[in-house]
Length: 152
Image (cartoon, rainbow, N blue to C red; front, top):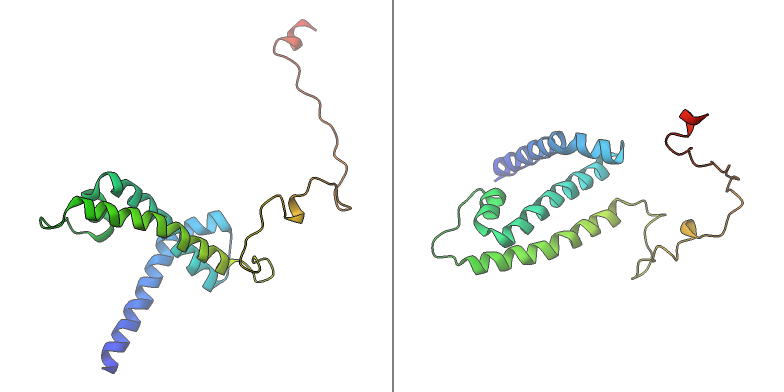
């Protein structure tokens, strides 16, 4: 039994390295350098986003999505309606899981508190009133119309 556990641990490490190398460059470009645990969450969220797009396609063409997601064709005894319903459920569930992952990845100081998430208009960083840290902006005039340089 201990041998079986070590084999699964080795396979888990290999799968993690494979996932990290496959999607690591994309998350690095999108989010910059992040620490190890957060990078794993971001990788899973990126993979979930790809799976979500495939499930949306799967609602219309169930045989395509089941082959791409599970690498198996739909058996003849399974009705396409059930596969479509499963894809519809996954299309609703995957964004919720990605949202939970986004909350976990966010620093504890910046996480939403309580049972609600503040609207963008409620946050102090998005208020329209100028703060003490706002620099005075210089007004930039519009460029001259086309052909105005030729007349001068």
